[in-house]
Image (cartoon, rainbow, N blue to C red):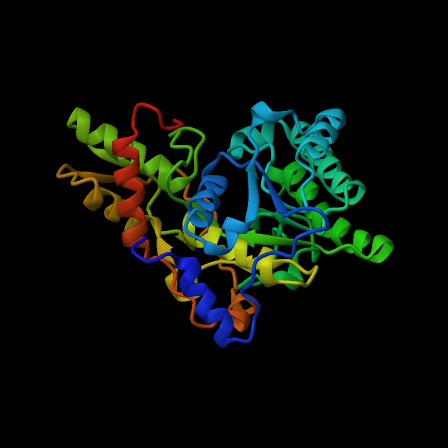
Length: 344
């Protein structure tokens, strides 16, 4: 980013009458922000954003990885909280997987995510964390719904059967945010991002998400002189948010969004793009000169999952998202440069 987006946000917050100050410290110490799942796509983006944020210089940020402890185990979570004594927590950690993995292991996805979330949330209460921000997913929304989806629709019906275990476990974070408020008057909230992409993603072709998977495919096609084959017709539409934009907005949620109700963090509905357009942008960024082929024998999946960002826009009407062509170029360049070590 040529100019730190959080500095841009700071001026916007002032214009909007929102606070742009550092997090309040606690007695006998500074603000300590603990980020679970801190070494993945999302966590790395937050780390990049706060490295350019003047306010973060007065705060201690701790980015956890799986090496710091298994969050499924309560004793491990207790030890982490005892060691770092966080005053704020951004909870990104989850057991995640692709469609077929979710379908095969529904019980595992439900139980492990429920245990992780319960351990983190209850330790936040016990250790006096002032604010918890948890990450949900658009897959928690009802399978049968109207579009665009918004924050009021989360519990309007069951999620899609394919990821029932994961989705219900994630929904329970929102339920517990309300319960902790009612019983303990605690300020726990959640955010719901649309499709995230950017550097440090998992570029696995078989089990990764669409943009990193296609970037890896295109890299191989260019290297081997083969066709760049995309599964499906390329017609489905999706909203993609660049990881550092999402990180900017997550830090804004931590500092300034005080409701316990979830908030969707997404680009505008007008920024929805087709998979075909995405594939062509990737080929252009990769300087791939071969043939781009759409294998229509493969299923397309859901045509659209449009989400409304009206709530976000009510707070930040002028926020400028990274254009997808620019974000894809940055992601492609990062993958090419880090091919040997990138997750894939």
